Structures are given as C-alpha cells and as structure tokens.
Image 1 (cartoon, helix red, strand yellow):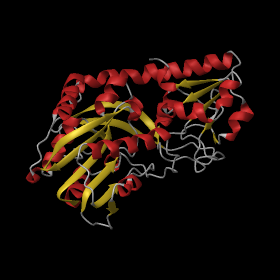
Image 2 (cartoon, helix red, strand yellow; image 1 turned 120 degrees about the horizontal axis):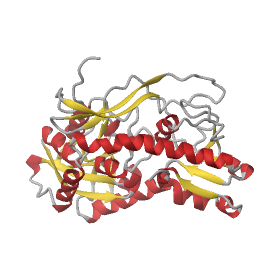
Image 3 (cartoon, one colour; image 1 turned 120 degrees about the vertical axis):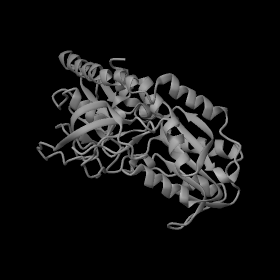
Length: 370
C-alpha cells in the first residue's frame, strides 16, 4: 500500500493505533435472503504524528446505508444545543444559516429557522454554518473544513459537533471506528485544523450523547472574538490527560476489542444455554464490527429489531442475522433485548413497556465486559 498522507495536514508520519482486521462495509445492509458472503475490507485507525488527527486509514467501500430512525436523544440534544448557543449570545437574531448534516439523518434547520434565521441557498455564504457529525464523513478533511470556513460570512459563526476522541478512549468505544467515518476528533486536533483555515475556537458545550459529544463554536481570527474560553481550555486539558494525541494511549482501546467481543459472545451463549429468548435492538453501523468480532450469528441472536422501515427485511452485514420491525417484539416475547445503541435505552423502554411487563429485560451491550 502507498504511504498514507494525513487527511488534514497531509503529513506522512503517524501510527497505526487500532486494527479491527477485515470487516464488511458497515453501511451496506444486504437483503435478508442474500446468502453472502459479504466482501470484507481492512478497518484501521491511524494517528497523525504532526497534527494529531485520528483517522480511518483506508476505505474502499461505497456508502449505501439505508436511513435510520433518528433517536429521541439526538432530537432532544439538538434542541438543547440551539438553546445554549442562543443563551450564550452567539446566535444572531436574523441572518442566514447553512447546515452540513450527517448522512445518517437529522437536521437542526427547523430549530434555527424558528429562531429567526433563514436557510441559505446552495453555495451561499451564511452567518451560521452548522456541521452536526457531517465533517467526519469527508475523506478529504482539509478540503471539507476549508469549504465550511469559506462559506462562513464575515463575523459569522462556525458550529462543529463531534463525538469526542477523549470519550472514545476513556470509555473504550472501539467500535466507533467504522468505514465511512474518516476522522475522530480531539479538541486539540480540531483546533489545529481550524487554525489552518484562519479560525479559532470561541467556546464549547458538552453533551452526554454517545457517552460524550462536543459542540464547538469557532470564528474567523480576523473577526476579533475573545475566545477560547475556559470550556475550550478544559477540553484541551482533558485531551492531554487521556492522551488523545499519544499513540500509547490507544493500546487499551485495542485490548478492549477482544474483551468486549468475548463478553458479548459468552453472554449470548449463556442465554441460549439457559433457554432464554434474546433479540437485539438497533441495527446500527457500530454493531457490525462487534457482531463479527464476537462471532455472533442467528443461532445466538435470531434477529435485530430496528424502527427504520428502510432497514427491515435486510440483514446485518457480515452475518445472517435478519433485521425485523418493532411489531415483532410483542410476538416474540423475548426474555432479554440486547440494545446496541445506549442512547436508545430510555426511548425503547418507554415505547415498548410490554417487554418488561412480560418479564423481559433490556440490556445495554456496552455494559457487557465492562
């Protein structure tokens, strides 16, 4: 393979810090009747020694993921975030807003227009540029951030929401690494990337979503913003404490792959041996590598429930496990439902009380082996 060039700074020096081996494309869900086998590709994380950006080493896959249902936790967090930005005095009362959203769905534009902003036209500069988990899907990180910076009007605000690399390291979230997700941001690395396009952090807000996400507000250096403030300083200190730019800090993440996968397999095996009926919930891309690493097939997990009609009738990539609709929860009366997206837990418990009413229980997959 040719030597890798950093997706942000173009540096060639770096370290392979996480290797999940050969994995199916996590965003391609075959029809349940398709016997496979599915093609597999290397899934590796590389840490740039120059700018500190953690990134997907290579991705020969083609994104084709069917849209998922937007979790209630994500909707609530978006509303909370817009309120916090407004209360900080950073959201203009009038102006133009443009959004770079995630291909997985969800939008903040309705919240922003409700605050008096109008939606920008294609390519139009905007007073507020919002990127909610969109930037990480760009293979060329430098070009993608430059585009967002160029569209930010003089005196405008650039808002970037990201799943914190410090959270990934601290919580052992190894399956955050996925095909199609090209970058994993520490605040330190993102600050360096912003500096290259003439922007600096102003402030930030932390949220519990995905175990720890950050919304970073940045402005053009020439606009005379007073930041960065103490919140940004605390995020940078957290990066240093965890070792987000130190390849040695990732060894625990690699170890967690085997520990977590073994725990999931052993738990499912124990449930089957005890005669307990188990189904999964949440046909998320983050579950793909976990199921493959744990050597789980439909003999251990007969089905995964998902609320998205686009995913029903398909199967989990790399396995023979079908994706079914929520109506089958009542029909199957499972003794346990293994939830693959922790942020869904409160929502699904409220939506499907019949599971617990029948004596079943909800189990967060992330707690197995922790």
